[in-house]
Image (cartoon, rainbow, N blue to C red; front, side, top):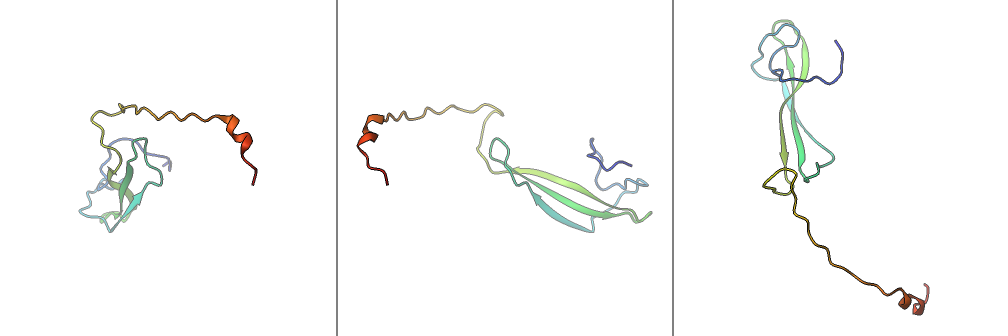
Length: 100
């Protein structure tokens, strides 16, 4: 079996080896993404370690993902553009300044 990224909606509580349903994980932990998405939200993933009672196979799986924080937006992808303040600088004034 390849160790690449799996796709699909596989149940994390089902043994990938024999298909037995596991009632609860042996342990859980939380992973926090180091970088926010473009809306400023952080992805938190709750991982779990399982052991099959039938065949003894061990596996890790994500049991929940959630995004927290960031800006509240009504529609995804639509952001209001803010007008910036225009600052004008006269570069001729820099000739009168003495260097440090």
